[in-house]
Length: 309
Image 1 (cartoon, helix red, strand yellow):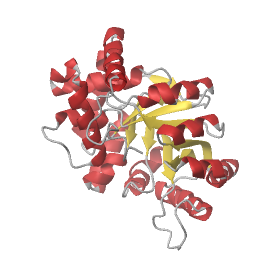
Image 2 (cartoon, rainbow, N blue to C red):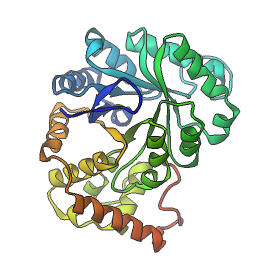
Image 3 (tube, helix red, strand yellow):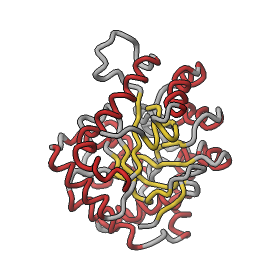
Image 4 (tube, rainbow, N blue to C red):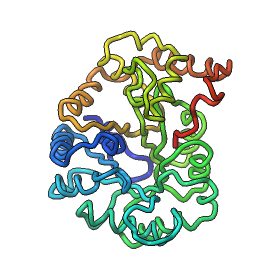
């Protein structure tokens, strides 16, 4: 599998990474997740991206592949008061420090390749205490690099403040704001860029508006964008969507999530078609820009931006 350098870090990451956010919603059992993780590593995927709030995913990774620790880069996130047992507000520095410690134990490792703040506000970033927690973890050898995971103005501040090595942000056919807002600035600072929600939750598969808030927002946008390629078979659509995300300059790795080994195999196969043709990339960008310029807003007037954090 193709590998790309993740910004100024020393990590050569596979262009496809296994993300665990969707597994939080699926209720997948440990055995199912373990099979997917093992298969992903066997297929050349070397990025595992999780978070404390993603159900039992950290424990599943630790149980499944801690013995293969040198084969993958381990990314996690902190910022939610889960399992602390302490009556403190979310984002309190003490809670963040404890979250990192819990992640290390659950993942059965003595270091993280990347620890990220999980979509905190711009104001919290400006206050500086949450950033200082990650910097101390890096200084102590608990994390090799630090990053911010999020979107919009908070992500833009995270880039410009100069504190982070990596930005994880939403990039897909139905969510292209970062292509103009944050990724060029991240590239200028030689930050690594990880694309989350890289296939827009496969919202094009849904005949009706999904109940999940993020999928619903993407589904609404796609009903307006009406890309021609959405008329193809599902594998072709998925391949085009994933390759579009990886065509964005600066993006090193696109995260996908699944609890089924056959889906993991299929995700890897989607890249067999190679780079997306430039004219198709241009047409997807043009359609997005035209819809935005004409303010073809959906109910609520904001393209469903709310909830996409």
